[in-house]
Length: 347
Image 1: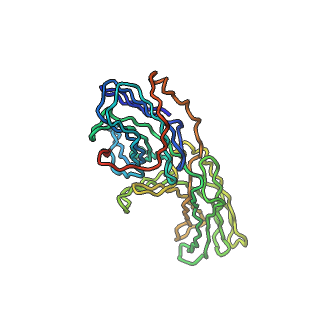
Image 2: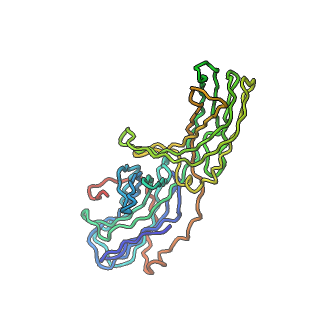
Image 3: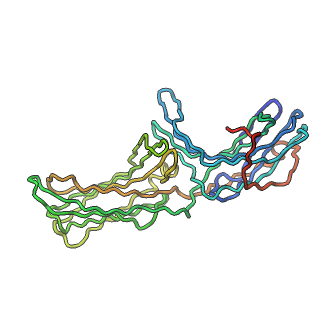
């Protein structure tokens, strides 16, 4: 994976990881490269793994993004190596392996013209002495993929709607339900949804059915929702002819072409978090073939959508010799625990 190199007067600091994407519980292998051009005082090499969810307000006129909400999801700080007698001029490469936490929210990017909500992960290397950065810091992003084993479920709903004519005479009842054959949908496959309509107690015929798939972004402050954005991703209308007092239940099997919507859906998914939540809602509107005083039957169901679980091919690992010819080989370190120290300065 691409690296970020920090340039300071005393040398260079870079961090490199082997793969471009991971899931929770996997091992991250990488290298920290240090080029020391002048003798440095006693120092400590710190490795940080951090995850954040952030909400930013986009000001189109100024082309600026103002952070209005943020929350730290994960924060591990680990002492990778200590030079108690200072660091001599040389090139150093320190291998490491970090075992990621099991439960990680996948990386996410929800961007509209006014709002950006994101979940990002980074690994940062810092060389410090007495709370002071010696060579700045080097950072590399991690793409965290969704864990398909996580249990999430679609919502099945049912509702009975009373009907009245313009003169307020009762015209019976109509029942509508929304059912899902699977617990969740993936953006790489079409979503199959069953709309069941029971018109056996209604004296009014139906005319058409309209389905709308919407994405709701709720921005939160503690437990309160302070701002809501709604995007309609999908809209379809089909003729549905159901005669009054029909004996059997009419079933319409809708196929929603989620792969057609893969560009936005591969960056977002259903989730509820401290700073924001993303919900997908499927709404079914049934148009009747008569004028009534009743609101036409309308039913909504929350559905779960996860991104396409796809791992990009791993890039070629840059060797220590390719970066700096005189690399000092150090045994690999496996890191699983965080270290809390007053010598480590928080971001």
